[in-house]
Amino acid sequence: MSATVANLKYHIYNRRFGLWLFIVSESVIFLTLLVTRFYMQGTFRPHELNQVLGLIVTAILLFSSFRANLAEVAISHGDRGGFVRNILMTIFLGVAFLIGVVAVEWPEALKFAPPSSGFGTVFFATTGMHAFHVLTGVIILIIVLIQGWQGRFTPEDHWNAEAAIVYWHFVDVVWIFVYPTLYLVGS
Image (cartoon, rainbow, N blue to C red; front, side):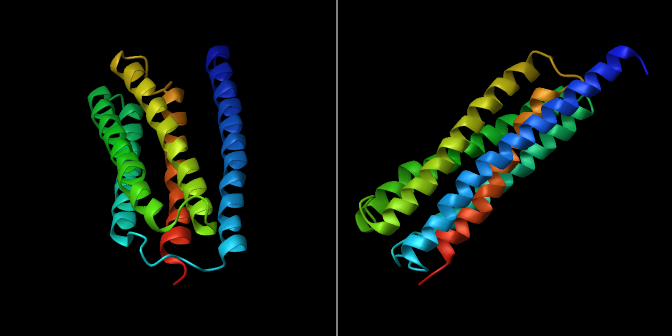
């Protein structure tokens, strides 16, 4: 093994380790928000909460993770066109999720769960923190899209794309816990 290949593997190992430390620290924030929901409100959930919209945005986010995975597989096989198409679709779905939560769900929720109420505080803090992570994920994916479009990735070296997609999967997995905690648990 050449020194360059060994050096690249060492740097990728360190980057992956750093990324996972970051993800664990971010997980603690969301865990705290989810525990706070039950501490402050028990299993109370307003019946006006839009269950259909919650399910739709969940499906959108899950499908976006599928497309992100297809993008990573494409770039790892040197398929730049497949990477660009799938990252574009992931970005589009991420924006659709944000519109569903911020532009549709929040105005509805303000009517029955204002931020000054217990459930409203938890709902807006949790969905707001998640929306912020989705927004940052979309920005990161746009940067990676540009890099992929410019041909900066190879099957051997596409760390930026891999890291962005791992972060995107993290954001999706967090929603898998947020959705039932806010939308399904309770009466």
